[in-house]
Image 1: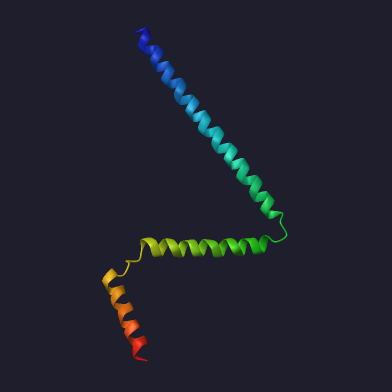
Image 2: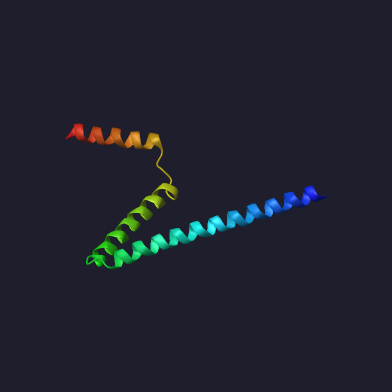
Length: 92
């Protein structure tokens, strides 16, 4: 019986250590992020920086939607369009 209790205490201790480690990691990451945000707010070009960030996020969103939402055209359809474009260019 003593062996089971010791193993249980070891698992409890491991769980507590894991939770404490995760909490410490989260707090240090949050502190670092807040320091970065404070530094960005002190910049004189904060408005331009925000506009650039907005454009970047919109471009990233557009790429994500294009990648996941749109159905790509059929390969043979693209080839056929290229052939038609070349024939139209040769006919001029």
